Image (cartoon, rainbow, N blue to C red; front, side, top):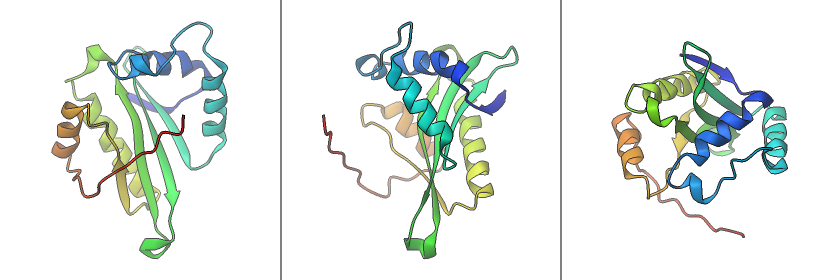
Amino acid sequence: MTFRKANKNDLASIIELFADDALGKTREQFKTPLPESYIKAFEIINADKNQELMVVENNVSEVIATFQLTFIQYMNYCGGLRAQVESVQVRKDQRGLGVGKKIFEWAISRSKEKKAHILQLTSDKKRPKAIEFYKKLGFIDSHEGMKLHLK
């Protein structure tokens, strides 16, 4: 497995991963050409030094997973840095093979390298298997999260 920063040529593979999911089917638009909104989002993320949109490739250079790591500067914790991992998606035929565990090992290592004091994530309550996976990795549900959809 190879971890690398995503490039514009990876966008179709990334959106296809997002759309090939029960929740993703309801919110993503995987079509050719890709909607301009994905391209704009990629350009913003790619230009931000605190954002790392990553892809994972197998030994034949196919994108088999993706995730986004964001570094957030805080005033509390003595001006500490937090890392947030989101948009973790593993291709269906690669699930259960250790790809997800490798993603989190990489994300933890990268977060430590950047001197983050915590790695956090959110997961939709409609994904109980994912939540159990995160707990097995050592994540704890220490806070109650809330969202307000603005659209």
